[in-house]
Each structure stands twice: as C-alpha cells, then as structure tokens.
Image 1 (cartoon, one colour):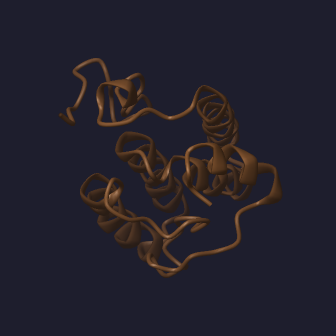
Image 2: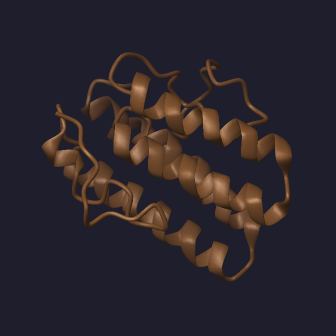
Length: 141
C-alpha cells in the first residue's frame, strides 16, 4: 500500500524511508546515489544556485522515477526551483508531474527522462553512462 508518512514533510522529506513500505524497493546502491543527488540539489537550492540544483534534480529524477515517492520528491524540488525562478511553465508542469509520479511510476516511465517541464513527460532519453549499471540492476534501462 502506498502511503504518506506523517513524519514526511513536503518541504524536504517526502517519501523518506517510505519506499521500502511500497510495492518494491530501490536497490541500496541506487538509493545512495539518488540520495546524494537530492542532497547536492538541496544544498545548491539553499545556496541559490538554481541551475546546479536543477541539474542534480534531473539526475535524481532519472534514478527515482520508477519509485513513486522518490519520483514525486524530485518533482517537488523541481517545483520549488520553478517557484524561486518565477517560471510559470515549470510550476504548472511540475504540479501535473507530481500527480503523475504517484499515479504512473509503477506502471510505466520513460527511461532517462530528466523530468523538467520543458521536456515532454513521455519522452525517453539517453541514460547517463554512470547510471546505466545501477538501472540495469533493477531491470530498467
């Protein structure tokens, strides 16, 4: 059963630890790299380096898009970047993508898609070389 953890906050901990309670679990190494990308993104976000924050969020999105909470968390932070930039296209795009993350992550995702609102949500994209082994381990990629 998918759930919203009462310990989680949309401000930063959406889905933290909840993935293991879902239908399937992210491989430990993939989770470590995903967490590292999210951490780098939030550090850059708080330092107001929004381009670097978004770069790391795109990378986190690629790794987490098959897992509802991780997927939604990447989009949540992209929404926050869009809000800080006052980018109405990114804001609207991320709101719909957050909903889609919860509805479709277990059904189908376009592998390699970076998740930004300026990329079609159904477009598959090349997976960065350093992520290919991680994603193949779970049968993705």
